[in-house]
Each structure stands twice: as structure tokens, then as C-alpha cells.
Amino acid sequence: MDNILFLKCARQILLANRKKGYTIPGAGIYPFQWKWDSGFIALGLSHFDLRKAMKEMETLFHAQWSNGFVPHIVFHYSAENKNYFPDAAFYHSSLSENANLNYETTTLTQPPVEGWVLERILSKGRHLPEVHDFVKRLFPKVMAQHEYLYENRDPFHEGLVYIQHNWESGTDNSPVWDEIWSSFKVPEYEFSRKDTQVVKEEQRPAKWEYDYYLYLIDLFKKWRYSDVLIAEGSPFLVQDPLFNSMLVASNKSLIRLGEQFGFSQDVKRLERWNMKSVSAFNEKLFDKDAGMYRHFDLRSGKWLDGLTSSGFAPLFAGIPSQQQMKRMLFVLERFSRDGKYFFTPSFDPENDRFESQRYWRGPVWVNMNWLIIEGLKTYGENALARKIKEDTIQMVREQGFFEYFEPDKEKSRKQQFGYGGKQFSWTAALIIDLLNDKL
Ligand code: 9WN
Image (cartoon, rainbow, N blue to C red; front, side, top):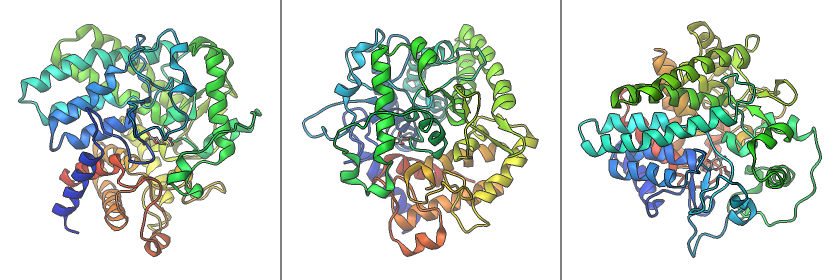
């Protein structure tokens, strides 16, 4: 398939997954609007339809809560999309005093990508007054989200915010959580899995893991979703390198946008937050021996076990020094097993718990590759960025616009398809961006 056709397919996927004012991540498996998916999707849309890109973000922020919190799923229910669990009834978001009662949403959030997405949308429509108006309208909302995070998710005022649930990380069943799950017991929940009706069981999290995911939400319900009580009592409280990298990258974008659009008071606050975040990041989350960023468990007071592709995300936010970045390149190359694996497995392939087709326990994800490529470019590491870009394009071209992919090149050659959901929106959106990139 030549590039023109490939691009056309990618656009068609985005348009086919588009609903009224937002885009679903993938038909069948993810029938609503997801927070960080919308960011990547808006970026893809911005290459050919700026209005739709802006609308995607506006729709997401309509569901923002009174305290600035942005939920990770907005359940835009209709007659045909009841097939997702846990649903709005399970979350019961109105238990929170901050919930937005006009929308049915979850009570968890996802990586704060919106600041840098706004800046990229602006770069595509710098000459258009409606894009300027859009940025001016959205800026205070994104700012309110950052304020929520710094004020409610950083109990020790370190400059690093915590996630309170694995679903907030975006990397749902990463092996790094195993250690936390093994530290407490949960009841067995009875429910019908909707995801495994659409995707093979061996490509999704296990049932026992879902029990933990549901238990945490039940616990939060008892506390009426109070962040104070969650921080005091929940067994899951993690400073995640991917989540915090997205926050820093968005801080930086908001600082530039704020200077340009006259939000000077906000710029001062953002600069203060950001300086603290970057230095805490390097002091606390960088493992000098491994040459890599790690997840920090606030409950046990130590790093979680295992290296993940989330540990490369600080490159995107310009957090590592030149020297740290060079150390990370060795890890990145090791993850590819001398070119035998596609860049970049989501979990360390030399770790016993690596599973090449189970979701975030090994497979390659296009959004993580995209973040790494963009990060490497800012460090001038164009040759490696190009290799990862070529791998990403080849993988999707050969196997289709799947949700995630087999890392082992040999194994992948023998099978025709990727893993997880088909016609997946962010895979399409980011392929559009990569194909338009001059690298
Ligand atoms: C739970 C939508 C989302 C992504 C996440 C990905 C997956 C959901 C699920 O799908 O999570 O949020 O049901 O498995 O892990 O990153 O945003 O694409």
C-alpha cells in the first residue's frame, strides 16, 4: 500500500469512529470518549480538519468537574453502546461533591496531554482567528486541570502528582502493578466481562486483575471520592513517569501559550510548578543504575519492580539531561533486542513477567512510540527517531490499524494481524502525524 492510500485509510478510520462532537477509540470495545485518546485523535484530525480537532477537545472539557478534574471516560450513552463494563452506574460519580451532573463519567482521570495538544492544534491554524479563540477558551480549563492535580494529587508538595488507580496510568495491566496487587486481598467480583467478548482473552488483563480494579473503585465510593481520604487510606498511590511527563510537557506548552495570549498570572504559577516537577522527577524517579525512569510507590516508599515504556516518556517532556538521555538510549536499544523486536515493547523483554501479546505487559503501542520519536527529535537523536518511526509505520502497514502489536518481528511475520481492538483511532491518528512528519 503506498503512502497516499495508507493515509487515506487512516483518515477513514478516524471519520468512521467519529460520533457527535467526539471520536470513540474503537468500535465494539471502546464505545465512548476517552480522555487521552481524544488528545491523540485531535492531533491526527488537526492535519485535515481543524474544526473537528477543536471540537474533540471542547466536547471533552464540557464534562470537566467543578474542581478542574477531567474524567477518563465520558459515557455518551445511546441506544447501541451499552456494552462496556464498568459502566456509569458502577462508578456512581454523583457521590462526589465535585461531579459534573450534566454528564455521566468515570471518577478516574488519565494522563494530562491537553496542554501540548492545544499547542499543536494552534501550530496548524496560527493564521485562523477561530483557532486563537479556541485556545483562549480552552486555556483556563486546562489550567484548572493542572491546578486540580497539583493541589489534590501531591500530598507532600513534591512537584510529582500521584495516580490513584491503574486505569489512570493509561497502561492498565502493566506488570509494575503486580507488586501492589500482591500486598492486599480483594473479594471475587461477579460480573460479565464485555472486553473479552470482542478481543481474545489472552490479549486482555486477567479476571483477578479486574477484581482489583473494581475493588479500588468500590473503596473510593465509600469515601465519596474524596482525594484526601484516598491519599490517606488507599493501597494504590503511585507517581507514574508517563503521567507526570505529560503534565510537565503540558506545563511547558501552557507557559508558551500563556505568554502569547496574555495569561501572565497563570504563567508564573506554571513556571513555579514546573521547576519543582522537573527537579523532583530527576531526583526521585531516575534510577541511575538502570539508566531509566521508574514508577514510585508512595505506599511502600520505593520504586515498583520492572522497566516499562512509560519510563521513556520523560524524553517527550525534555526532562532528562543530555547524559541521562544517553543512558536511556541503551535501554531503548536493549528493549529492541538488537533489532529482533519492534520498538518499543511496553515492558522489559528480559523480565520474566514479559508477555508479548497481553496488552501492556509487552506489546508495542503506537502512542508510546510516537511520544518517544517526538522526544528523541527534541534531543537531536534523529537517526534513532527515524528507526522507531520506520518500525511503527511498517508494523501498522503490515498488520493493520490495531490497538497494539507483537514486538517479536519473526513471530509477527507469521501472523497477519495485530492485537486488541481493530481500526483503532489513536493508531490511525498518529500514523497520520508520522506520515506528515519530515523526519
Ligand atoms: C480503560 C481507550 C483506553 C485507553 C487506555 C487503554 C484502554 C480501558 C480499558 O483503552 O483502557 O480505560 O477498558 O481497557 O489501556 O490507555 O485510553 O483506548
